[in-house]
Each structure stands twice: as structure tokens, then as C-alpha cells.
Length: 119
Image (tube, one colour):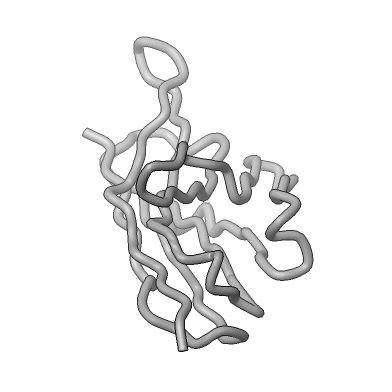
């Protein structure tokens, strides 16, 4: 069974930085697209950034110039470097990874890590 485990969230002051990590385990194949999403209570989960196996990236407008997504396929890990954090970045951040399975392409999600930006 594929599992995704995020880490790196926490409390940071406005203007600060955090680096989120997400490790995927339990699959015999390498992950396809990997990404980060975030959710605030009462609001639909939104994409933050996605990275393909070829390291092509797509970053949400609100994250451009501040957040960077990267991956280490040897470790089945995806990262999100977040700089110049703002209070409105406060949310639960989830990672997602797509894997080829016997039932076709399937996405898996982590349990989420809380990011709080506050002075």
C-alpha cells in the first residue's frame, strides 16, 4: 500500500521560510506527477505546485517567485521550499503522488502538515 508522509510544517513569522518534504513508500514503481496542495477550513483544496517526472513544474500564481517545488526520485521525495511567507499562506498542506497500478494511474495523498504564518 502506497503511503505519503509529509513533514516540515510549523509556525513561522511573516517573511520567513519553511521547507516541506513528502516521502512516498510502498510502491514498486516510481511516482509519476507529484504535487503540493493546500486547504483552509471551509474552502476547497487548491493546487500549489506540481512537478513531472521530467522536472517540469507548474506553480500557482500566488506562489510564483516565492515557492519552489523539486523532487528526488532516488528517495521518492518531493519538496516545497516556501519563502517570503504571508499570513494568507496559513493552511494545511498536502502532498499528492500519482502511481501506475494494476488498475491504471491512481493518485495518493498524504495526511497533511499544518503551516501557520503569524507574528
